[in-house]
Length: 131
Image (cartoon, rainbow, N blue to C red; front, side, top):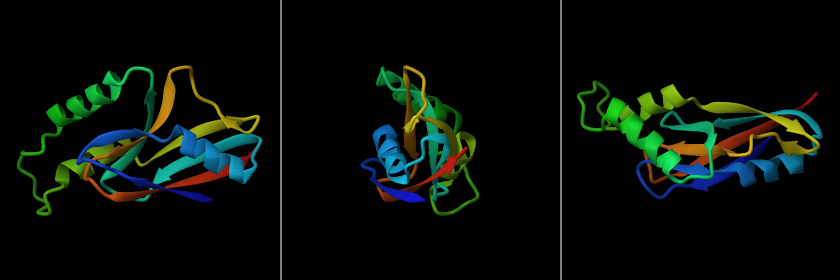
């Protein structure tokens, strides 16, 4: 299992971590199988989405903010309840196929780390499984 460290820069952002996932996978030397990309945080998430148009991540963030606003009334008193809800909706992990030692993604797809309570230093775990 490999660990990726990610330093986020703003309260909410989506960071393309595809190349870091691929690098971690190459170190595992798996030719065929799958890898799990998992964040260790309850206020962050991992997703796969379009990488070609930078407006797509912006639209995702804006849509989440409309549905889960920062200034709504929440019971959790630490001020980051919206981040917990967004993390739960997007999810803490993605399962990615591996073939010929490379992650298998569509033409426009990338693996994104989603920060909902930054800026912070974050960790993502990569577990490769042959098969």
